Amino acid sequence: MTEIWMKRLASAAIIALTTLASAAHAGEIMPPIFGPSKNSESKTRLFAGLNWTFGKQGGGLSTRVGAIYTDIDSDDDVQGARVFLDLDLFKQGGTPSVFVTGFKGTTYGMGELGLGYDFGNGEMIGQFGGLMNHFEIGGNYGFSGSGMNGYVGVTSFKFDKVQPNAPYEMY
Image (cartoon, rainbow, N blue to C red):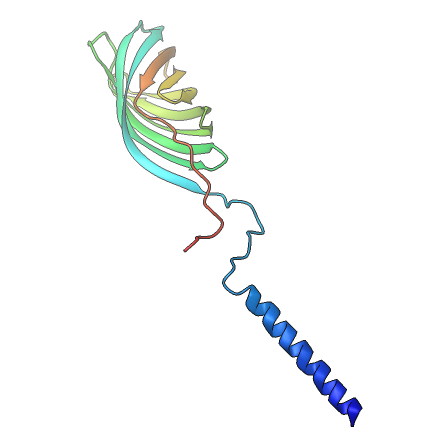
């Protein structure tokens, strides 16, 4: 009979200890297993810019107005596209052009490639260059003989860094 009571007492002690031990941790939040999760942010904004152009057709000031789409992740990687109208400011011989370009890089700088159409000359234009916060530099190549032109300019767009998300919400 003592053996049966000893087994029952041991079983009761085990149940009591496990119940009390689990209650001691009630309400605690498990620490995160992984680091902060990655986050990305997509935005579409309007922009304006002022460029100094130079090359075969002369030089001068032009303005760019358009829309820019950016997708930036928490590692500062950027990709996106721009659609814009390029206008000669002082009628120095340049004609209106429209461009569609894509870019990829980091928030510190990225490369850009695209195509455009010059309404005055009726020709397709290839565009290449680099973008940074508030600055751009590059060139245009007219496929029907207008040749190579360069530009350097300032713009209103800025590539904002994205903060990583917390792995879970507290309360």
